[in-house]
Image (cartoon, rainbow, N blue to C red; front, top):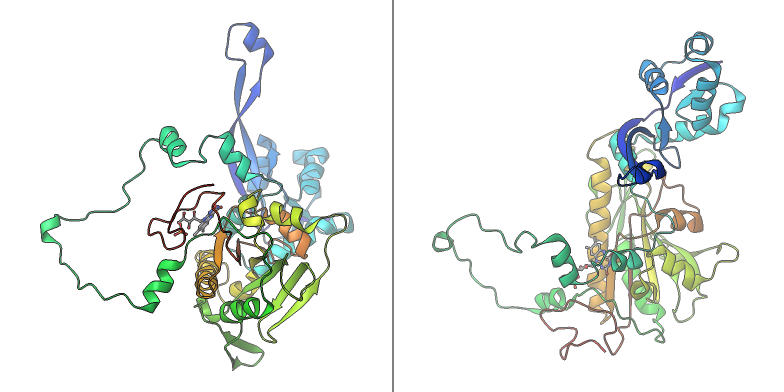
Length: 394
Ligand SMILES: Cc1cc2nc3c(=O)[nH]c(=O)nc-3n(C[C@H](O)[C@H](O)[C@H](O)COP(=O)(O)O)c2cc1C
């Protein structure tokens, strides 16, 4: 057999704390800290703890060139080698290691920039309840945040003396200002109101719909959307969790922006839609109650086809999603609806439900929109009182 190192590897030396009874009984803190090496690789579900010998071996091997396994086995021991092959950090050329090899090859073929791939995978959540997390940490209110972290950097930056500023003409506010000012993150949806199919269709068409298409070269088509996209590649797909829309069966869908149509996707067995919506937004019930949630999920291969192993490519995908989110929120606001975006999402749970891979394609944010509730049960920031003229919590 021949072996090589996996395509992308990042080694982290991390301080790990363990409970130590002996230390406690000897009058210590009961906590024993120890440095451990963790190997991060984007084709693996979790970082792998590695020892000094594994570090040495991984450092010796090329991620490109295959070498014979036998001499390594003699030097590093068969058991050590096997452990690394099993973990997927080392790639073997024979059949028993096909699963690890294919996962690694999928990563190579996609042209992720190595560090971006590690960051992307390491920042995905599964089963996280961020809503409870912030309560437990005491940072669910402005006062809690201030107490815990002290004062934040100021809201406005000054780069010169006030008297030296060049005042700019104030433009009289027009209807576009009114639209911009009316957008405010909605955390209170009317849980009984149905969203009309026409309104859903309009918001989807304006945000994710193909406004024009162009044949750029042989086998290379580009589409135009209302938001900009790096390289005009528009890699971001819109998947929907539909809960309350007139004429639509509640469930999972994919929006086809060319056909302006929804594609029905199967719901995972034994999962209730409302529970899945809440899991998707990491326990934030105020967002989970929206009649429609849109999962914004780039197909990374589409962007990385052009920006191969490029250190900015992942950033561009994130910026694309940000633009789409703002367009969606303005379109929803224009319909008189509330809307939101969140990155506090359980990516892995969403990927499983929609049949996404996570590295090939996967969610970066979830948006939603719908009819606002009459009363504010969850706090909303509305300093210009456009949404809650008689603001106040119930
Ligand atoms: C990228 C991004 C992520 C956000 N994530 C959350 C979130 O997880 N939970 C939440 O309640 N609000 C979230 N928000 C909403 C912000 O809290 C909100 O935009 C901010 O308070 C300003 O209020 P406004 O949107 O009404 O102007 C997010 C906003 C952005 C742009």
